[in-house]
Length: 259
Image (tube, rainbow, N blue to C red):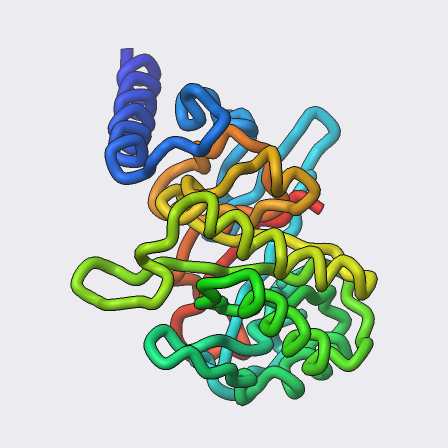
């Protein structure tokens, strides 16, 4: 009876979490019910030493990663590697949410070089606030200039977020067609330079896109507090913004990579 009770409780909690996601996230275009059938079986997810892993029939199939920016300050990447971190997604720059200027991340060059020196596989991401195809292309060229041809093990990610309620952002009023065109334009410039691309977001942001258009881009999916309910294939699941990793002061985003 006790085992049955625990199972029922886990099921109930999962259903409650799923209901919350459905309430907060709009449906992805082209999918009739994208949250009702998760792409990965929830039974495969469990925690080891406080971090999520995913186990398939052949054993563990995921890697643990962080994503960082200058918000984390100076990072001891050798300590990060020793703490079991396999990969890092590093912010290279951003566009301002109001005036729209382009800025490099203050720690980008250090983070990318030092993470590589410590043996950590790297990708990068750019926080976009592009409202036109031309601005998205400008951002992509800015990223390529920052990279300077440095090879990456993982993709260049496009992070195009709307702001929280009550905060004005230059991208808030874009239609789904406009947001898709912006994402496509950024990714095409990056791909033409020989890098893989990935699109980041939670259900709220990803729901804007036409995934038939963006089918060649990998997905970096953010959902906290539960198992990932995304129906589409995704390469990375960002599951918390409150992770603790040796070598990083304070909280950091933790990710599960299905590389």
